[in-house]
Amino acid sequence: MMDTTKTGKKIFLASLAVAAVACGDSNEPAGPVIPDKPSGDKAASMVIYQVNPRFYGESDCLKAVTDDISRIADMGCDVIWLMPIYEIGVKNSIGSPYCVKDYKSVAASLGTMEDLKELVSVAHGKGLDVILDWVANHTSWDNTWTITNPERYAKDANGNIAATPSWGDVAQLDYSVESTRTGMKEAMKFWIEQADIDGFRCDYAEGVPHSFWKEAITELRAEDPDVIMLAESSRTDFYADGFDMVYDWNFAPAMKTLFNGGKPAAFHDYVTGSNAKIPSGKTILRYAFNHDVAAENEVDRMFGAPEGVPAAYVLAAMSNSTPMIYSSMDVEGLKGKLSFFNHRKLDFSPELTATYKAINNAFKVSAEARGGELKNYAQNEAVVFSRENGGKTLLVMVNPSAKAISVKTPISFTGMQVSELISGEKTSLPVMTDIPAYGYKIYLGDTQ
Image (cartoon, rainbow, N blue to C red; front, side):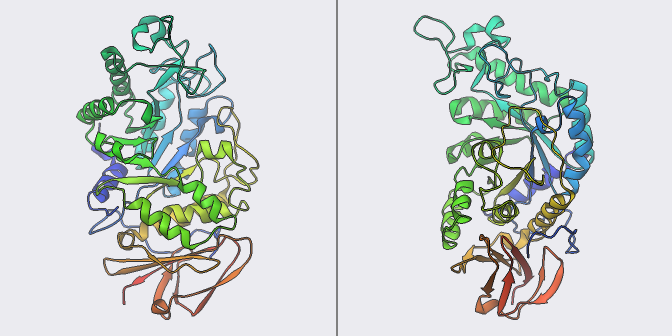
């Protein structure tokens, strides 16, 4: 694979090596220019965009995603995570894309292998990496392996292929069988070799033995030393397997509590405790919602109102993590729970796209300061915190409520000359700052 197509990933990995682990304006920010490459002690500056291809129409979904790549890249994203693209099984199926019939196929409703290759090529041309959703714990009941390699499955008392303990629509794989390990690693390598894929988000990583993940990641990095590996688990022991990232499962529920009357001071305690568990050189994934959270919660009410979603994303981005946008957060007017099983055509909002672009710009510009210690200045109605590092000071204020508030500037920051990173305006920090409902301010200045 050509290194020139991997710029986003190279920058991300370089930054991790030294990492310590106003209202959403619809206009593009006139703020500072994002540096091309991190230097010095900085926090990670990678943004992931989770793509549900089924939200791009009834057919030719991968082509539609390809057409959207320029918008995703311009939003400041670095990695596209494609939810499962594989053919879905029919036997005992409930329509879940995580019910894989063939690990080396592309579902006909989404497109073809050539469509996927074109998507990856266009993404690489825009500096984006592409990772696939990988389902290693189970397969569909009519997966090709059930015929060619039945020994790869767990068996019930009668010697028949067994369902997983949690889901009856899928069959449980058995990793005590060497053939299972060999077949799974070979299938993962297939996508790196055939489609130039840059890594994997590993579904239900806890269902698969650590020994397999260590073997697989070692062999994948022999194919691509910079392969990106994200474990769907909050357990930090997956870092030792070679994963770059694990989930912060509790972040979205904690933000839901905050935006529905919770105590702002709890944000500092939660993030500080969670970040303390991240080894140097690793990171953690945070988001307002992903496909699971959006399927289980009413997205327009989870954070009080639709306007609360970008504010919750600000807290994810500024908490020293790898933030993620799910393809629906940038759509106006969505209500209720969002099933990720079904095809539908979502129209992405230019205004919300600009909002997330501004937040991602602030996230990247503040990388130097975000490497510093989180200091809490929370008030009764607002999350307020700062970080200082590398001669830079970052001050963040977020209003998680449905009413406008006035926030007191911490005394040590009053009068400081700063840039407000969302608007790009230069200002002197006042004694009090007015913040509208679900609004936020992100200030950056030179440490005094």
